[in-house]
Image (tube, rainbow, N blue to C red; front, side, top):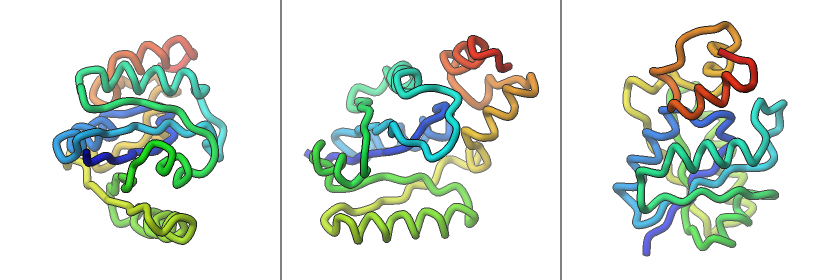
Length: 159
């Protein structure tokens, strides 16, 4: 079975993330969406909320499962038996960060590969940070995130 891990903070999950997950679900037998407990920044949603939103958003994909993890992503990839990690690359601006991340992970765990996928053109600009900002400013989010995320943002006082 060919398996891939798509790790991230998903704070919140967007249609851009889902586009990458849907593409991966056609390329791999199993896609594991790994929701990281450590975000390195102030998160809007806690780990349980981010995990739940990812599960709801991916429910239509039978070969996708969502798992939360703590610690190094390469260690999690080994635990779930994923020989590769998937990363989305939106633009040239992502390249330097994603390359340094991939090389660091390769140094930490040489047997885990990093695979890059590019989202569809309509999602190239989309980020969770942008979604949070639009929500804070009361903008319409229907073209950016699933309905469950819109509801969760409303419950947090955003949007």
